[in-house]
Length: 150
Image (tube, rainbow, N blue to C red):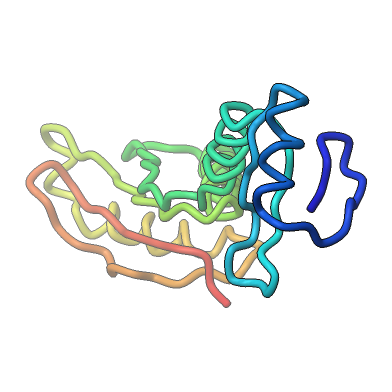
């Protein structure tokens, strides 16, 4: 038995514990039912439920998202480095990154150069990466899916 201040009151019969809780205007809450004897606490049951719910809500794992990085056909070397740094931040948080290069008009005739730019993009990372999906053709250009390596 534990009182509302957190002080241990020792082992006592259920009837005596209920009377004590009623005298103080509080509830008798069973904290650990599987122990012998069960552990009970005097307190406000509504407050106890709120604390339990708040505690369970606080421990959500990070959902893996797919973040997008878009490169242009005529992108400069420094811009590729900056995009790689941004992708590295996403990977550091545990997200996956989809890197795509969009080709417009006459750029589609130089698809091999766009593919090379995506392959070159992988070399800018300072952390190990895993290629989940290799450079793949799509109607508007190419894309590559990467995640953090081990």
